[in-house]
Each structure stands twice: as C-alpha cells, then as structure tokens.
Image (cartoon, rainbow, N blue to C red; front, side):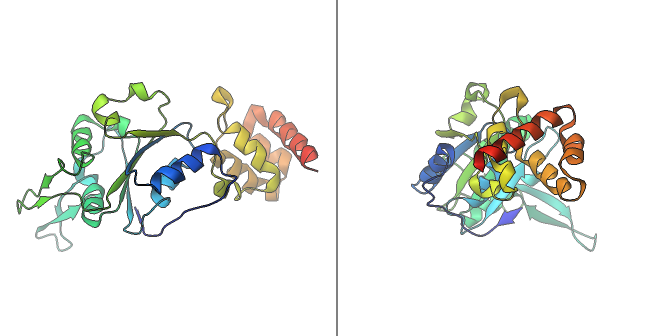
Length: 245
C-alpha cells in the first residue's frame, strides 16, 4: 500500500498526543512508535502525517507472513516461463527515501522480525544485498519509519526493537479530522470512549452505528452495533446533545 501526499496541521486545538506527533515528525525525528488502543488512527497517521512526499509503504505483520512483504522475493512472471524479482515494502521505502509503516511488528515471526530489524537499523549500519545481482542497497536520505502497536507497556517490546525507536507516543484519542467523519452528536462520546479501558468503543464502531442510524434509526442501529450496551450509549448521546444545546 502506497500513498504520495503530505498532510500537516497547525490546529492549536489538537489533542496533546496528536500535537506531539506533528512536532516530532516535523522536526527531524525519523523513528516513532505509536501505541495505545486500536481504532484511533495510528496507521493513518503513519501513512499520511509529516513529510511523505517520497511515498509511504505499509506492512501488516502476522505470525504467518514471509519476507516477501519486507525485502521481496522471486515470483513467476506473467508468462509463467520465468521468475521475476518483486520488491517488498521495506526495500521500496529504502530506495525512495520514503516512509515505512509497520503495523504490529510484535506479531511477526522470527525470520521476518530479524529482517525488519535490519531495515530499521541506523543508516550507517543498515544494508541489504540482492540475492541475484549482489547489489548492495542502503536507505536513501529521507527514509523514516513509524511502527504502530496495541501493546500498552513498551517494556514488553524486545530491546533490539525498542532501541531503534527512541520516540514513543501513546495515541489515546481519535484525530479531530477522523472525528469529523461522524455526525456532530457522536463526536464527543466517540472521543471519550476511545480510551475507556475495558469499556472502550472504537471509532470504527461509532462509524458503523452512524451509517446504520440514517436508515434504521438510533434505537435499532444501536442494538445491532452496541448489543447489550445500546441503552447506555443512547443515553450518553442524549446527555451530550443536551449539554451541547
């Protein structure tokens, strides 16, 4: 997955976590971990915030993934008579001097994890040799990496990984831009519930409710989306609407 535009903001009302991210990305930090509850826009921020004029590339880690997504691999060509090398996202980001976004690296298998550590090493140390041509690649100027994880305790991450990311930011609220995709009466409660511990409700869930309510109404949509929590959510929405009036 690749994007090629730049998003910045100067909104003085940004929540602290988002303002911190803007500040570090716009002031030379090229390794950042975004952690915290899911559904707050961590991946979107990694793909779009700061200078991504040279593109951004995403890897989503699982236990079963291979290095094909990281550095690349030989694959059958379209004619089926030969093999062609297809570059992985990390190598693409290196070559362009772009952004590499790695989701849930803590879930990667040992081989993939070791390869990613190499691609995330300091520019002076990092290198990768093409298995066919023996050409040696190094990260081009401008390469940056953002790692996202739902792990809350950074001490749980392997030391070799955490050492490569000196800046860690806990994202505990949806970005205001994302909240604007919701109807006005949902924005405050969606922000409040994003980091509500065991009671948390993701922004995606509120978006599903917001979509359904347009044709099914609040009561029916809330029962479908929120199940046994529907009554409490509807009450909270009504209270917020009264306070805003």
